Length: 280
Image (tube, rainbow, N blue to C red; front, side, top):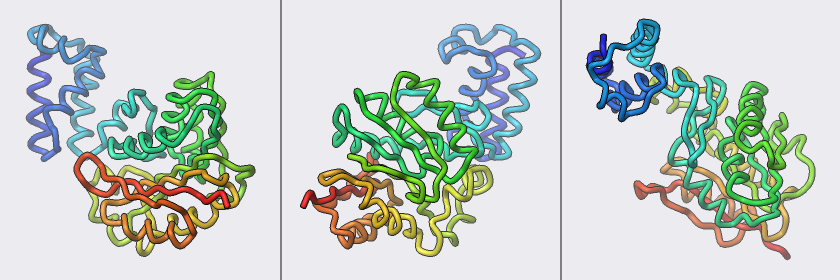
């Protein structure tokens, strides 16, 4: 088949499988297996596709139709202008999480130290270090597989920066103090996980999703346990679920964080809660 025929087949197959953005995913997968860009498809639609690329594309369309995430098929995900390696062992970076990074960047200055708790792919910490000078970064996770991905991403994307990744149950093995602590912890209530899209509940790591009973356990633990590791005047920033803003704000206020603020995402939903530790 030629480019146009393959694309049309993929688009129809994904649409029939009720995949959101079927046309976009069909095009991205075709670009990926053929090593081309979007413009090439339109300019060379009548050109025959290599038989090996065709077979791979049809296989990918079948997997995507069965709800395997697009990013697991390509193995990459764009985030904050960088291309991150992803796998079934880490959460796929979301555009919403860029709000957390942007707020962290506003409160991170050159030469500061940054801790990313529940780092996953490392996308938050790596993005902060990429856009700041002379900062030191520590990424923490309980998953060894996730830490391997994070290290690989950092070595590829910011090899000249000062970063480390360690395995720890939250702050158990963390030493020293930091100027900024960021976290996108597991925050979905256990009883809600089975209602999520198959791409999430069946393909992303459960330990990175499950916030237990009310979804707030990790906010409580991190807000309390981070205090010995946060410099006076230093910021703690959380990504949150859309309905958790006031709950997380109250948790931080109870731990005596100052100027606790809820930041909305581009859809107008609560997305980040942040505040600073008093210097007194």
